Image (tube, rainbow, N blue to C red; front, side, top):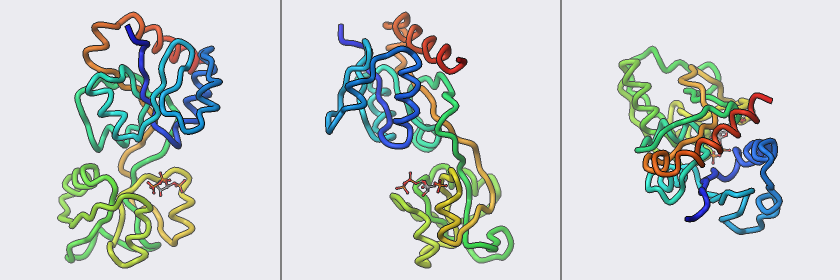
Length: 208
Ligand code: PRP
């Protein structure tokens, strides 16, 4: 049988995940010297480096048993898997933001909002009873109001630095975000002991 395969979101979450694996006593030498390789052994496990949306896809389809991914991606994309643990790192929040001093809640004009997260944004504005026109942007969403494409954005805010340096500020916070583990539905049945061993290792390492 193949080793338990873990899909890890590349980028922001990587460093904290490696620290966690080391605290769990797993050998991360290969992962830390990965070069351009995408599948690496970490202790007895196989680590797969992928983009956040693809972590969900690989876990949902069962080619990876476990995934490390932000709640932002889970909330936006959803899917058929179990969300198991809140890892407590990768903390940030979804927020509506706009040019300093702007007010999107009064006035009758239809707002244009740019976002990488159209589902989160439309749920939020629906809950506020607001009709907005959403424009999907793939990254650096802060550009859209600066260029005059949108009145506001719905995006992730971590330190707030990107907003600040571009003359934007938070209008309202939508929800907190942190890194989560997700597990394939079938794997949790067929490889229950191995998955439990791994998640117990996480719980123990997190409470050190
Ligand atoms: C995210 C987000 C903001 C920035 C916020 O972008 O979209 O642009 O981080 O971080 P801060 O509050 O600490 O400044 P990311 O770096 O993930 O890249 P992206 O814009 O390509 O999505």
